[in-house]
Image (cartoon, rainbow, N blue to C red; front, side, top):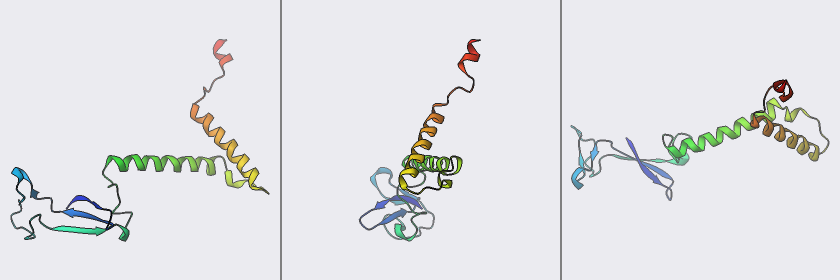
Length: 127
């Protein structure tokens, strides 16, 4: 079956038979034994809320999905860096202000890491 769009008002995705041909403006089935007598062949509707991880919008094989997935994994890598590498949750604070101060310092360190500062001091290069 091939994906034939999403009906957002009804919350479902439509799949149609991949053997349907639209050549010459006529809709014809190219199967040897047609699976349905319908004009557009067999059509299946899947409700998105039944399994949102499997049937999602945008579809997993599209460019939009790849962009969304890259943004999501980027955020997860950032969260991991803050929580695991810089041990954000290991501190014992009496107020949320101190937690935010530590988070702000961690974010500055992440920003400096992103600059990819040189590993050797400049003075050593000059001498």
